[in-house]
Image 1 (cartoon, one colour):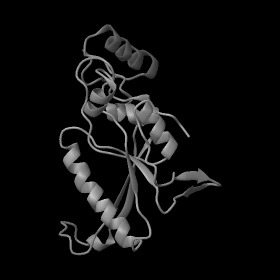
Image 2 (cartoon, one colour):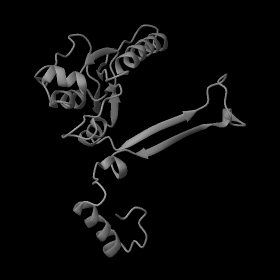
Image 3 (cartoon, helix red, strand yellow):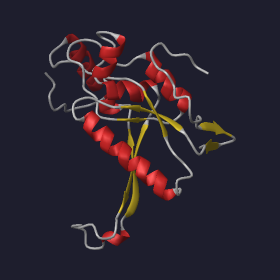
Length: 194
């Protein structure tokens, strides 16, 4: 079992494991959660009630999620000390327990990481954003045949705008990228070349 600096795993429940090409979920999985910042605590507490009720109803009380709070954002800054927005404890716990859920997180102003969300994606190699879209009967919809909607959208989650590789316009670094695009890649028109 991993040891953490400031986290105490629950004494009840069991880890979700991956083996033999399968995700193995016990009847009492321990799931780490990050409460979040700003409206995060309100969203998290409501979400937790919904998730607990859904599991209780779906499994007739035979299964229960055991929640394990881990820290990121403003709460991590308070628990671990100024400037610690994403502690190694949290990353280790998420890796160790396989599944986690998080509320909205603030973006620190100043130096360090640009976005805790992007840092989480990159450090945990969460490269896909999977968005199932399905119609629920009785819900108003502007679509002519909403009952036919059943799709999954896959969006890349760590590169492109999420890579965090950017510079202010006009800096030597930005100019170097513009020159590389023009000379090496043959790009003829750049919208904001300054």
